[in-house]
Image 1 (tube, rainbow, N blue to C red):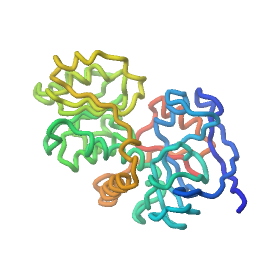
Image 2 (image 1 turned 45 degrees about the vertical axis):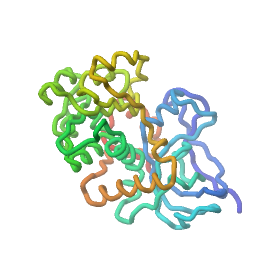
Image 3 (image 1 turned 45 degrees about the horizontal axis):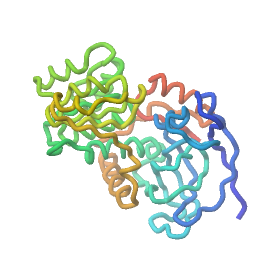
Length: 331
C-alpha cells in the first residue's frame, strides 16, 4: 500500500519556538506491535518545550508531541486490544503527536470511551495520567488518607486543575500555588482548599500557617528551581518531595545531608513513562482516569485551542505562563 502524506510539526535543530515548522511527511503501514492513528486533536504539554529546547535532547529532525486522540486506521501484528475504527487516545513515547497521521507503538494507546470527546481525550491523557500516578502511586510513608494536607505547585495548569479536583474527590486537603490571583481563584474553583500566589507571598510561611505548623505530607512540584528549597521547608517529618518537572529550570545539585535536619525527608523524581511502561499498567491507570472524568468528578478544562499551523504561538504562550488548564492543537 502506498504511503500516506501527513502534516507534521518538526524541529531541525533545538532552540526557540521559531524552530517549529510544519513539514509534509510520509506515513507507512504499522509493523508488529504498532498502529496507525489519524488524529482529531493533539495535546500540548510542557515536556514538548523541553524537547524543543534540548533540555531533553532528541535526534534531528524531531517530530514533537506526546499526547493525542483519534481513530485507529491500521493495526500491526500482535495488537489485540485495538481494532481498525476504534476511537483511541494516548500519552506515549516516542514523541510525534503533532501531526495528522502517525504510526506508533500500540501498548500505550487506549480505547477512548464514547462518553469522552476526542478533544477531551487529547487534552487529558498525559496530564490526567500524571495526576493519577502522583495522587495514587507517588505517596509518602503510610500513604495518604482523607483529611491529609498536600501541596501542589502550578495548580492552575493542565495537571494541576485535574489534581485539584481528583484530590478533593479523594478527601485530600490540597494547598495550591499559582503565579497570579486569577490562577489562584481558578484552583480554588476546582477543588483546592487553599491557594497561594507565590509571586506575592512566601508560600512556605503560608503553608505552615494553614497546617498549624505541622507541614504537608507531600509536595508535588513541576516548577523546579524556583520552588525547590522552600518546598522542602513545607514538609512534615518523613514527608515526600515529589518532583515531576522543571518549568523554571532544573533543580540545582544539593547535599542529601540537608534532608535529615529538615525532618528525615524523602525525595523522588518521577516520570509518567516509567509508570506506563507496560500495557497492563497503562490500561489500569487509564481506566481510573476515564472513570473519574466520565463520572463528572474531574472535568477537563480546555482553555486554549490553536491550529496546528499556529504551534509557534502556542509554545510562546505556554512558556510565558499565559495558559491555564489544558491546551490542544486542532487539526
